[in-house]
Image (cartoon, rainbow, N blue to C red; front, top):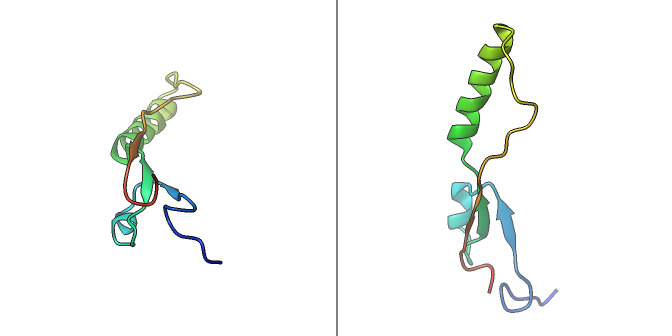
Length: 71
């Protein structure tokens, strides 16, 4: 289509997987704290099994990883 990244169009991925660093240009992405999310999920399951209260909503911080696919 003749579009250039990032000159004509910007690309932003999600999840900050290792593949985003292997492309050219490298992909700007959103990093999620996957380790923390998994640990929390396990703790929440254990609490539920014990009939303990678990928050209905949890917000984890994310971070923009700026790479070459955006200006």
